[in-house]
Length: 230
Image (cartoon, rainbow, N blue to C red):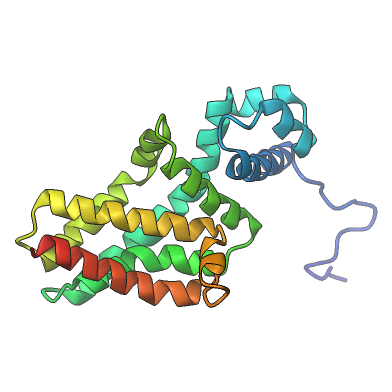
């Protein structure tokens, strides 16, 4: 009699996880722990020893995988930056192709913002920690700017190139200043500090991304036009 596809031959135990699979799972667990710690304490407030303890591994393993604390931080930052950048690049490419010669500032800004805000609205603890980390990094003067440049500049330049199609007479400096102010709004929103909850007496909630998204698109688009068309 033939075995059913899911039935294992008698006397043979199911194959366990390979060494490579176990290694990948351990590495991901370390990154998850480090992500949360960096988001709460910043770069300087985290030690490899503390990450190793929380991840239940030997500190030597962190050096093996990541070489140094900066190497660990870069791995944490890159892991989700790649996903965000791909989402936004695809959204901007798709919008530009669909709009043809009728590109608008609102459409370009929405293509840039909504992939991030949609992910934030449906994020689990890992993504929420990462978004909080972006807020920390974007406000760190010593090395934060260099980190944001390394991981996010290509997609930002892509946004500006699409916006420029809607505002062909805009000066370069006005486009970049407008993005600078958009970036501040976005990172503050992603951090979900609860500040607006207190300020508004509970009328607004920092985790209410559905309320934030259309308002941020409208606010940012109006800002681009006000600055760039002056």
